[in-house]
Figure 1 (cartoon, rainbow, N blue to C red):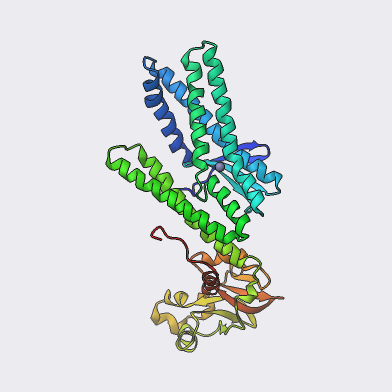
Figure 2 (tube, rainbow, N blue to C red):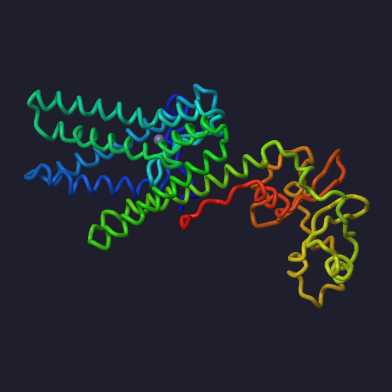
Length: 379
Ligand SMILES: [Zn+2]
């Protein structure tokens, strides 16, 4: 659902602002709950047209506040030298996407705290507007939205300050632990465990609430679940980054791999290479140069009776643009290519010559060796 393409609204302070279609869900939820529940209950006797107009405007101002929160993170990050890709509104609120993680605990703290500070300032501004307009004797239709916006922005600040990664408060916690231990990975582990605890506590609270008849809590539970998932995946990403950053592919690959000739048939390949061989995939050579990669699963896609008449060359994966990597490249840079389902291995070249093969297993075993057990909710 989050893979839906976002719609570009424009730029603010040079930062692209996008809206994901999933945002419409939360916008409609907020606008209808204001129009048909909050305003009619708090100010009985108004016409529904007044309530709906007021509800939609208030909801729009609320999401403008969320954009200001994300922009605040973004502008502080940019001041510190981090490139900001974009700010996006989506179903669970807003997100500021950065090109990279903050480089130091101090920078992480500044970027993280900027959002909640913005929300508190916005709450104060709306609260002041509410007081001034109220004391000026204006009707409640004018000041009621400001009262709501003051409260909700304060709630956004408080919620985001909960000390669980990837919430802002979790980033503040990570920056503190990082500064104390000088170990970013360990700091991430603890901050994301705390994030999982907070997320699953919200889910449990929501389930209890729903069982007792408070259906409104479903949303709260979904956000909790989202936080818990994100906490775990953020930690995994950090493990990958910490263990593979700056590690050249050449140090993880298997050197001088056995090469299969592209001119032999599939039954010869199975006989001579897969049976008795230790590998499940081989680089393929044709006329003295490497042309691709063949795996057992490529062979299995061809019906067995055709094996004697089919050349390895015709079945091999020959998308060299995707398969070839440079031996000096960092393992971190190619991790996502390997993590994807296929091909599960890359051909490593140096000075235009094949020097090795890098499999998913090579990289994963390195990450596993270096990592502390990934936190699980049952811990
Ligand atoms: Zn934030």
